[in-house]
Image 1 (cartoon, one colour):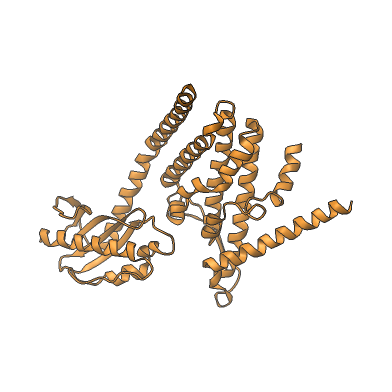
Image 2: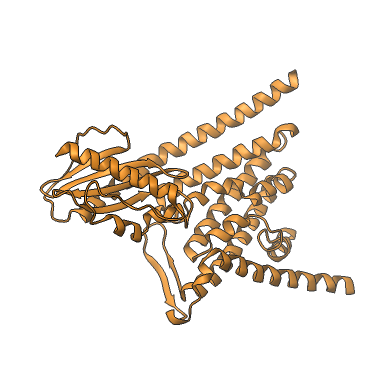
Length: 167
Length: 213
C-alpha cells in the first residue's frame, strides 16, 4: 500500500513539473504564434482582394459553427476564415467571395494532416479547382485525401451560407 | 578521451539509423529535402540531449516500476516545448514537417537511449551520449536527404528557417536528367537500403580485421 502511494506521488510530481514547464513555454510562445497567425490573415486578404480600400472584421451568424471570422474587403467582397476538422487536426483556411458571388480566393493557412495525402488540400491544384466557381456550386473532393478535402468542401458550403445571410 | 574514441566509432557502428535501424519512420518520410532533414535533425538532437540529461538526473529518484511512464512524460514534455518553439520562431519548419514534429515522442532512438544509457550513467556522459546520437541521427538523415533531393530535383538548396532567406541554391543536375521517383517513398527505401548496406559493409570489414588479428 505504501509502495503504490510512493509511485503515484512520484508520477504526479513529475507530471506536475512537466505541466509547469509546458505552461511556461506556452506562455512565452503563444503571443508570437498568435501574432504570426494574424499577420498571415492580413497578407492573405490583400492577396485575395488587392483593390480594396479597407479591411475590417464584421459580425455574422453561422449555424454550422465552422466559420470563425468574417472580414469585409470594403467594395470588393468578403473573406471567411473557416476551421474544419480534417483527418487528424483542424484545417484552417480562408475563402474569399466577391460581390457577384464568385469564389475569388482560397488559401489554406493550417493543415496538419498526413503529408502527401491530406496535405493536398493546400496544393495549388485544389485551390484552382475552387476559384472561379459560384456560391452554391459543387466542389469536387480530392482522390486520396477524401476526409481532408470533404471537410474543406463542407467548410466552403458553410462560408457560402454565411455569405448569403450577409447579402 | 574515451568519449572521443566512442564518438568516432558510434558514428558508423552504433549509428541509430543505419546501424541500429531506429527512428526510421520519420527518417524515411521527411528526407525529401535538406531543410526538412536539418530541421528534424536539430529538433531530435535537442530533445535527445535534454531528455538524456533530465533522465540521468532523475535516475536515482525514479522507482524502477514506473521508469518508462516517467521517461515518456519527460520526453513528451520536451517534444511539446520544441514544437511550440518551432511554431513561434521557425514557422517554415512547422509547415514542412507538420505532424512529424510531435511524432518525435515516439522516435525510438530517444526512449532507447533513455533506457539503455541515461538511466544508468552520470549527467555529463548522458549529455554527451545524447549529443553524439543526435549528431549521428542528423548526419544520417542529411545524407539521405542530400541524395534524394539531388537525384529527384537536381537542385541543392537550403533556406534559413527563421526568416526564409536562401542560404544557398545550386543546380547540379539539369532538370532533364532528374529522377523524380526519389522524392516519393520508394526513393526513400532505395536510398536507405543502399546507405545501410554500405554502412554494414564497412562494419563487417572492421570485424574481420579484428578477428584476423
